[in-house]
Each structure stands twice: as C-alpha cells, then as structure tokens.
Length: 111
Image 1 (cartoon, rainbow, N blue to C red):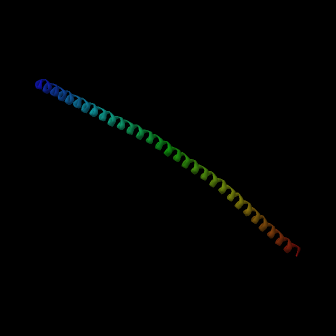
Image 2 (image 1 turned 90 degrees about the vertical axis):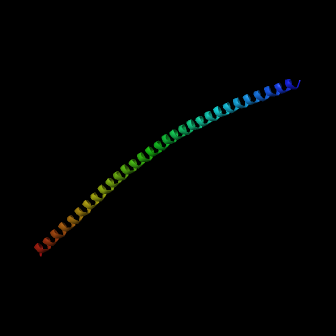
C-alpha cells in the first residue's frame, strides 16, 4: 500500500508540475498579449494625438493667416482714409492760399 500511495503522490506531483507549467505558459502568453495590446493602444493613442495636434496647428495657422489678411485690409483702409484726408486738407489749404492771393491782388488793384 505504501508503493501505491507513493505512486499516487508521484502522480499528483507530476500533475501539479504539469499544471504549473501550463499555467506558467498561459501566464507568459497572456502577458505577451497584454504587452502587445498595450503597445497597439499606445500607437493608436499616439496617432490620434498627432491627428488632433496637426488639426490644431492647421487651425491656428489658418487663424493666423486670416488675422494677417484682416490687418492688411484694415491697414489699407486706414491708409486710404489718411490719404483722402491729407488730399482734402491739401486742397483746402491750396484753395485758401489761392483765395488769399486773389484777395491780395484785388486789394492792390483796387487800392
């Protein structure tokens, strides 16, 4: 009976060793799968982040270009207003000077 018990114990130990090996192999496989999944998710997150970053950069670039165009338009408009005002004041000064000269000539002639 002792041999039978020893044989049963040996079988149980062998079964336990095989079970532990299988569990160890499964554990390695699952660990490898988790690492692969984490790597894939990391790559996916990186790609999505790049897309959002590129989109944000493009939007900022477009906003910058629009701002520059608006500033150019406003500058041109202001420049035209200043030129018109300068021209108007120049004409008014010219007309006043001509009138003054004519008035002086009239005074001299009527004199």
